[in-house]
Length: 216
Image 1 (cartoon, rainbow, N blue to C red):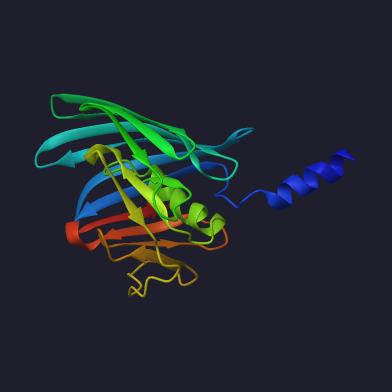
Image 2: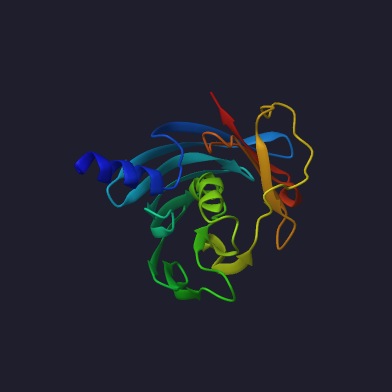
């Protein structure tokens, strides 16, 4: 009976990237601006994504670290981040309680609610990459249903419905087997990922001239 229970659990659990550490480099208009390391580990409660990175922007050095906890459906259950930019230090967190998410940050407390037909939140911070890393696995598990995306650094939440095929031209260096997903609004972006491993190989945000690429 126990082997059967474990087999059924494996069949019903959503696919996720394998445990391990993955490295990404960021460029802005072709110039390197940062590097980050993502460590994935599975826990009884779900998936834990720990990130540590840094770089420079406008002549100022920056460093950050964050942890994104996902439950067994890949919905976020907690998010904590800390960062420094020049002489400024910042901390923030998100907690989730059903249809409500609460942010504690530099500007105080803010809440976000699921709206319309969105049944899940996602975290798409600016700087930290952990939420973008999780997005293909989440959208695959949820059949590309609409979500509410939270950008903590902006103190803003917005509806998002990524298309399973973005229609974007494949950038140089993106593996031939990768597929793309993305949106045109409110901010255009495209994520290229391996549909077998669900590993992100590249994120493009054209408006900002930003590209984030996985390195060996």
